[in-house]
Amino acid sequence: MSHMMQVVGVATQQFVYVASRDRKFNINEILLVEDPVYGDLKGEVIETQSFNRYIPLATERNSLLEPRVLDGLRQVGFRIEDEEINIAKVRLLEELTAPVKTGANVRVPEFYEIEKLLVSRPPEEGLVLGVIRGTAEVASGMPEKLKGIAPLYDREHGMLPQDGVPFILDHWAMADYPHIGIFGGSGSGKSFGMRVILEELMRHEVPTIVFDPHFEMDFAEPLEGIDPSFREDFSGRYVIVTAGKDAGVAFEELNSNQLAGLLRASGGVLTEAMENAIYALHRQGDTYVTFYNKVYDLIEAMEKERALEEAFRSQEIDPREKERVGALLELKQEFASKVGNVAPLKGIAWRLDRIGREKVFNYGIDRVVDAIKQQKLVVIRGSSLWVLQIFASYLVKKMYDQRREFRDAQQRGEHKEFFPPFVVATDEAHNFAPKNQEAPAKSVFREVAQEGRKYGVFLILASQRPALLDDTITAQLNTKIVFRTTRSYDIATMKEETDMTEDETARLPYLPSGVAFVSSAMVGRTVPVRIRASKTQSPHRENPFAELRKKAEDRDARFFRAVKDMLPIVTTRMDLVEIEKRLGRPVTEDEARDTLSRLARLGKLREEKILLGYRYSLPGRDA
Ligand SMILES: Nc1ncnc2c1ncn2[C@@H]1O[C@H](COP(=O)(O)OP(=O)(O)OP(=O)(O)O)[C@@H](O)[C@H]1O
Ligand SMILES: [Mg+2]
Image (tube, rainbow, N blue to C red):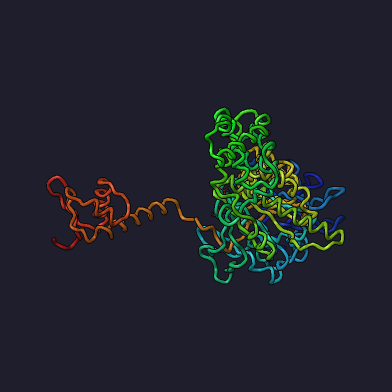
């Protein structure tokens, strides 16, 4: 019998050792143990090793080689001194009441036997995210519709064929097991994976808001080297909106609490005095301008109190000025004692200025809401992370409330305009909702994490630092996609927050980019997945050094075009003014000289040494 595999040892009820003479085991593959008592038992290979004449088993030291495994091997008939032996540690996927039998036969399953374990939703109804590792062999027996839907990618070789059973995340099950976390160190594949998820959400027309702190979420550019048959055009299915440009916070709708949060986000901590001043001065309905004027007027009134009083009593004051001064004094009368002194007001004023410059308050969120109602994906950018956070806190709260009001009204049998369920996704999630720290968007992210399921609002949060993400939120992420992680602190968090085994967490530091463990309450098992090729790519993938070179080349080419008609140029008598005029920017003598000599080195100009300088002309021409 070829490919004979047998149980050669039993570690615990959950783990067995399997050996074979001629078949190498693959990590993560599923095998069937044909136990005489239990019948066919599914198990996953979690550790493998091969021994032969050169690496004889008898002299090796290895966790796979406990004495009972050696005994088991002998018992089953292996000659451990000189035979080739492949050994695997296998975790059984079902709970047993007694251990399986040593000697039991083990075989590779047919696809249909483990289909339920591997594919929980058909591809047309779920998110096709990648390939389940260790399934290459069983994949040959799977139906056509599962083939060729998750090709892989490698920066060196481009696209590669799908080499196993597709991993299909059942997003419908989020109704019971909401929210997804994407974790992993720098370069581990989070953004790539997020892109694949977002492409899938667009395919299913799931309304989605994506905060894009790194300006990398655009879907216009096809993946480099993509197979034409895999290409997909996402135009019309997403929009990009920039906070402060075509969306913003409606200041009039803020309550004092939210305003304090925004001002805090714009410039670090607010002192207690500043906070008190905000609560004293702000009235809901204030516009940015009315509130801003209130703050500045009060500063003026408090600083110039005496002069204002004198002016008010003076006979010469003109009536309009008198009215203004009177108003200032009234303002002082009303608020000065509540505010104390001008220092906190100045702190507020500075922050208001800073926010005002970003134009965060100039626009509403109509564009976002319209796109969400059309079931599109909305990429949201901001001029900086804090602007994005401010906008996120406002936008998510507002949309969440609308969705909730719609659902609650529906439940009460009242009519209210439809507001769809939606997904909120963001990278750098630990900045939006940090552990043990305030941040503008934290409370609404928490609210959605805890209650969003009821209303069909789901989070997809990516972070390099799971240990820094608010733990209330982390605990609510029912599906965690964990890429390569090397910091022990973050590994510890993943150990606590997932059902990954010791073996799996031990492998986390060594995962190649794009490979992750998906630990999900939906599946009840950790699935090792290689994320598929994305169909699109981030717009700025240019190598930074290539970028520098291109910049220099552009600069030189522009210079060359500008001075071409001025040749020959003699460095001791350069017409810098003319060069500046032609280039439309200031040029120093040094820059001109350096550029000319570089162009000569590149063969674009001919350089001759003359007394005290150089003469440049077009090559191959005598002038
Ligand atoms: N699924 C994948 N298939 C092929 N290549 C991948 C995959 N995932 C990641 N890569 C490669 O690894 C690189 C880094 O991945 P990515 O940008 O997603 O990292 P990241 O986890 O977002 O890192 P950072 O935290 O620094 O943003 C990608 O540019 C790509 O070349
Ligand atoms: Mg990234």
